[in-house]
Image (cartoon, rainbow, N blue to C red; front, side, top):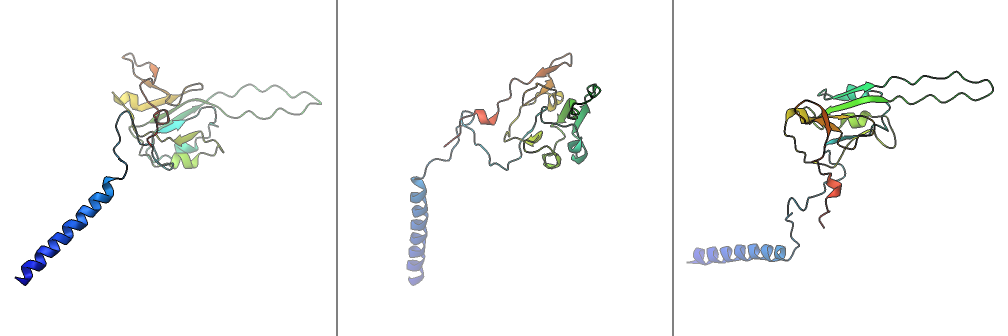
Length: 181
């Protein structure tokens, strides 16, 4: 009889402890996200999809050499002709090397961040991991993104049947989604 009463008391005590936890959590704010109208913004050190800025790139190729999965390729633009210096005037500064095109194959990228770390452009990086964690690809060809000067954040991809490069229109940038409070 003594063991039965101890068992009942122990079970009642454990039940009350569980109810106390439930009661405390009951009045906390909801943590449910109403996807897709609300999206969680990841932490600042999150490594999402790679983004590229053709204007900041100096075409050094460090990102290509640092990439272990060989998913990055670039082509340097032809250098601009240099005019002869005029006597008595200071020499013109050397032009920053430019790129003709830059591609990233998201199907091969393992999001390690080595390309971003090797980029020597400071303070604004030419290549960085954005906070974007979702992307939609219909075909394997769409996973290869290409940038030229003047392209937007997502670049262009082969979306048409004839293989022409088309701008990415259906990609939603995570910073354009309302932040959940």
